[in-house]
Length: 150
Image (cartoon, rainbow, N blue to C red; front, side, top):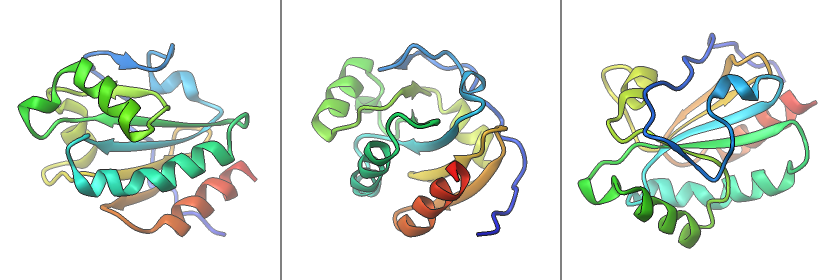
């Protein structure tokens, strides 16, 4: 599977914290394949992607693999870290969550037009090898992760 190199990821900056993790940056995950998904817990399209992400996370547990959900709220009720933590439990989100309350990274990564959800796969060097807007493309996402884990 030939994977296009879409260039280096921008990293995460100006976060309001992280939940469910001890990491403090994406750079700490270099050497791992990382799925980065911009999402918010009130978004139905985001919720619809979670079953595949849970399966992918479980399948590759213990490998050099991680998922990071960048929670970028659309509405004010989605800004509260306690509500985000509660929603993570309810939705079965067990991977690290970066709090991007002011949507700094949401717009920095996506440019002028930004979407929920948007899913990227980073290779071991931090380069983007997959970029998908919205639901779907699960086979392509899963195959990209598997190919990079090789």
